[in-house]
Image 1: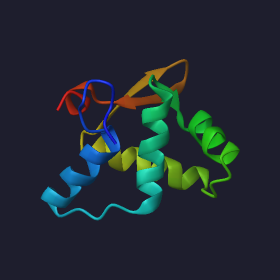
Image 2 (image 1 turned 180 degrees about the vertical axis):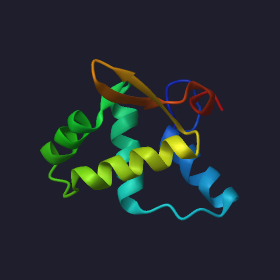
Image 3 (image 1 turned 135 degrees about the vertical axis):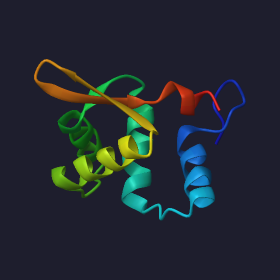
Image 4 (image 1 turned 30 degrees about the horizontal axis):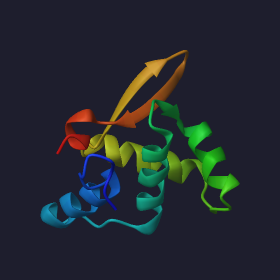
Length: 97
């Protein structure tokens, strides 16, 4: 799937980058990344979990945090601390590729 500018989506870029790096990409990680992309702005893990549960996706809050931390560790996502919560957003450098 491509975005409006003809670029590959964040999830597609993420999958390709993981293959290049030899990193396993689970279906739950893909789902977390897809919902993060859909949010389009900074979002905290609790809000992300609610969005996913509205779509009837079974996932626990610890696993959401684990996926988000994994995405941060690999520099796919940026984490900011605001209002006593961590909020996450797609790294603009990754999105621009």
